[in-house]
Image (cartoon, rainbow, N blue to C red; front, side, top):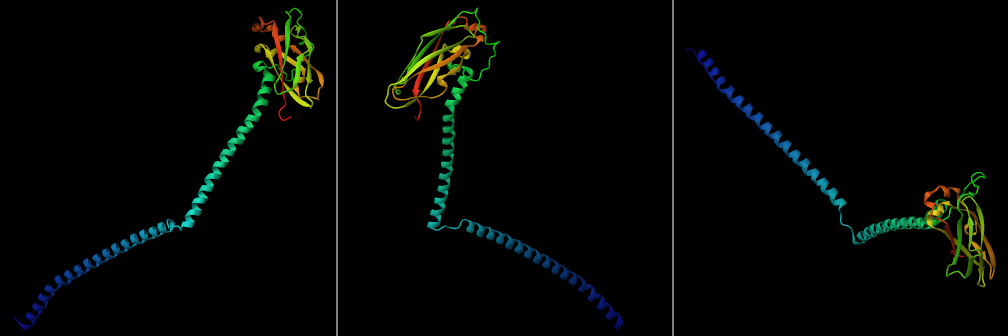
Length: 260
């Protein structure tokens, strides 16, 4: 073998030996780089999580920071004041509502009774009858209307009917008088309540004019006549429930007017 051939073989052998070594070193470098990037990613993510947790903790600490005793007392006092104010508003609203209902109940009840004859109260609302429909039913039996008058113990008056009864037929108008006297030495204002017995007659008992519509003032020892003008509706004759009724009682009770 010549010297040139030996040198060529030596170079080829050295080249074959060197290539795997370079490839192995390149592979090791790649793996080292990958591990390094993975470690950096884990470190960065851990830092981000820790930083987020720290920020949240700081926010909670700022929100839940400890108040001084004075600040805590003022906050508690403000919360208590708001609760008390809300409670007072609710209670005040209920009181106003119930007071309004209580004041409106009496006039509304009396208005209902006047218009419908409920609970034996004679009808006193606007009631229009022409000459054709308000004709007396002369062929109907006559109804005795008796009168009664009482006075409250708080009212120093005497009050009584001037006639015991009148006899009418349905559709016939009648006029009756009561006498009232103030027995005290000072002016007194009174108001009368009224009722009809039996109660089922009340829807047919109509008052055209009555002293009970308004308050009445009597001077000391004054005596006056109080008229009531009324009629029994002709429809009374068409109601079978009225067939057995021959007597009607119109009763009045005088009370001292409220606040007068």
